[in-house]
Image (cartoon, rainbow, N blue to C red; front, side, top):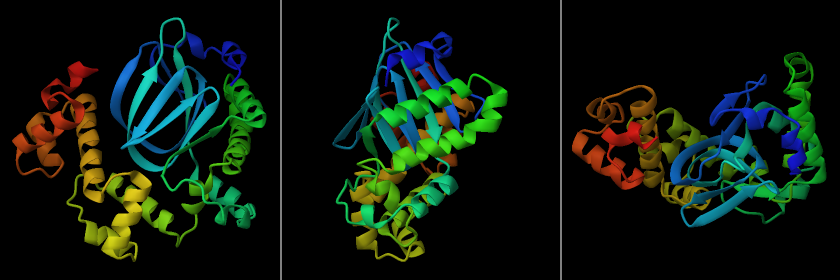
Length: 288
């Protein structure tokens, strides 16, 4: 991505953190501090880096996204991300929630034969090259986001153009598969959403498999191929990341958080939390 695109906006003047734009589905994230690898949940999004670099880790898989490579997370995944930034060169990106209905319409309009035979990457996350057309579309989006009126009139059409460019990318194989209703990838994507939405309930793997009309062994295999985690590992990471949100954003006490997540033993919750984040839950706020 050409850095001149960023220089022509007011995003560099924003404070560190996540900021809304005139489009509800588009956020701007900025930080001028290096951030070591830390757990985060990403949910069906496109990330376009305007400056700086970030590395997403999913188990033993590492993906770099920067000005030349965008990141697509077609399903809900717990990632460990490391951010490279400084006061001289802050990390700035657009975090765009993917409109599932819009993306489905785009993929339905494409010739599926071009993608069904593609080997591609089975992992539920991918990066792709920022083409000149994607750069041009991003520039248009940034210009429109400067005006509430222009955003309300032109914003959605520019997003659709951007999603189309992403959908025809070289590595977009999984993105297509997750929108094919009876495809195994789509089934796992629905199961991930189910876990994400019901993190505070007792979720068992046989039920998840049965809901998607899959055997437990097949469910387990496809789940691990896509997420690099077993279902139980994934469920625990979602629960613990949600726990951090409850502690930090909603001022929950540690014991209340443990019970909210379905733990019978708060001490076990504290041990799991510390093993995952590197500090006990009572220090969650201070870690920020």
